[in-house]
Image (cartoon, rainbow, N blue to C red):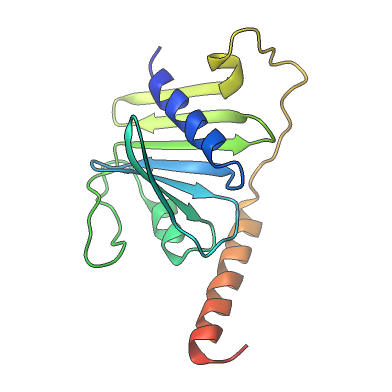
Length: 160
């Protein structure tokens, strides 16, 4: 099935970092970037059998640029003029306590949708009654992002 390897990779990455509930992925030529709902000053950089990846918390200033990325766009500048290449896949999902749900993939060649990662990847996992909706409120997300941005600017100026 198309996107099954992407789903497997995303679910394995999600399980590897349980404290960072990923909700968005961008695949570039040279790496994958995940965005997480957690607020942190740490940037996770790691590698799995599919390649390199980075996990950015939602309060990282670069997260906004990654959220704006569209298919075939070049990567935003992540420092020192480093380019990750062109966007070839965008993934969106809702993290729950033990699953990724409402998974959507967009590529230049097509789209894919899965209701549940566990349902697709684990034998015998029933989807009924197991999915808890945790929709991302875009207004609230941007409000929190701007609040974190203002806090960081205040700290840089020495004002708290």
